Amino acid sequence: MRVIGVCGNSGAGKTTFLEGVIAGLRAAGQTVSVIKHAHHRFDIDHPGKDSWRHRQAGAGEVLIANSHRLALMREYPEPRELDPHALIAELSPCDWVLVEGFKHGDLPKVEVWRAAPDGPSRDPLYPQDPQVVAVATDAPARLPEPPAVPVLDLNEPAALVRHLLASGERYLYHPPHHG
Image (cartoon, rainbow, N blue to C red):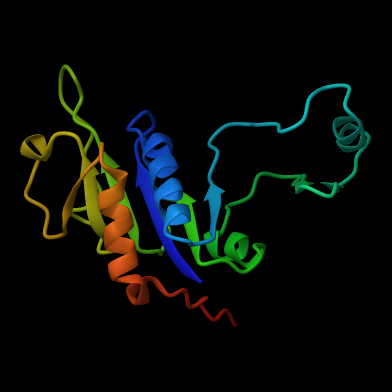
């Protein structure tokens, strides 16, 4: 399994970029799973549905499955810091795991950086974060400082796909040893 993170500020275009990366990896015959960090409360089912009713009644986990898919919802009684490595361990084997969010996680990552249309842009991570292996942007000339890593065109996810396929060994996942 190979793992790469994609991080950046809200609204920078991470999800759209990842859609193209997923499609490109799948077209190359690769299997892909995604872990997405959500910053706000979210729900994948709706009030009144059986799974929602079970969670509202107090179930700590609800697993919904049929012959086409499986979804597991887990309720935490108290907010907790998420560990991307624990989430990766939950996945079935695949060729690639794309981790969206977790900008401070200890995984190799591509930073999606978009220049603000008017006014100052948010500070990028790449100058201080050695885990950033590339920057995907729509405005390379507006980057606050020249990156020491490759700069990719945010509007061409195929560039990242080519990079990943060419250097896949670099992204082989080795879970950290805790203990």
